[in-house]
Image 1 (tube, chains in turn yellow, brown):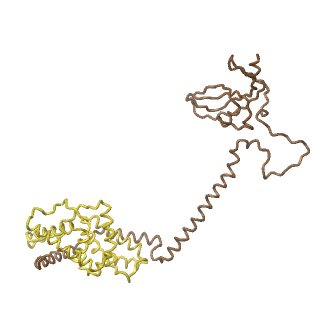
Image 2: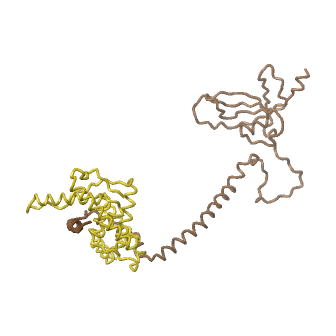
Length: 183
Length: 215
């Protein structure tokens, strides 16, 4: 039984960061991401006998569980969640604080814009663009055809570009901390 | 969307992914997950085949469907056997039980006692409640009912005359043949709140209204 525990701990060690990052980008909340990560692996623990490796790889399965938990959590919290983690976690190094700070600000803007996208676009951008998953894997996670993933990604990137362009033309429209994460 | 914008988005997303890749998940999450593992392992359900789980679940359901109605029926039967006859009004006058052996006697059967015969008055107390009473008690008897009051409120004795059947109907007093039309004089202990607490004395009287009317 000790070996099983070690195996489960190894599964957690491999995938917990990806699950946490995904939940954080999807929810915009560090607290929700922590809860979702914990519930994802707890549900894996509970439903491990029902897991069928031939249907989906374990990371895909975990992403799917995390997606459902995040959506449920956001829906339960009245469809809107305050973006409390838009701040960049990257520590400011001593090499050139001004450049690092500027890059950090750009990343914060990008996070805000991604968080404001509709969830159907946000999840494909996060999974494909940030997590590097293939279209097939994302389609398995979302339960949609691959073509749908392609079209959503294309539209999502186009909307992302429009908002970035709008931001360049009019910096005053930068989303504030009151920005909301639309489910 | 231009190629320049496409490439800019790719670079920005890649940069964001690199930063996010260094995200550190709080250690409390891992502690909670492993604690859940330990708790589930302690419960002995880890690694159990799903088929066995379903089988146990089915057996539990079947057992519940059988045992719950059986238990309910047993409780109802037990209640009816132990409590049912005791709440019958004339239970204390029953002379034989079903399990009692039947005794054959040559003597004529004794009729069951009636409430009138329970207490033949050694000293008949004749009371006149008012001057305009037209009924005179000519046959009387009384039953002393214990006074089960525990509260310390003041009590008043109220004497009333009522139909015999009202004893059973309004006061819940067990009585044989409550349909018989007779009058009863009752002393009722009434509290300050106007609620009757007990019956202290009940005297049977014969209605001589006709006699009084004839006078």
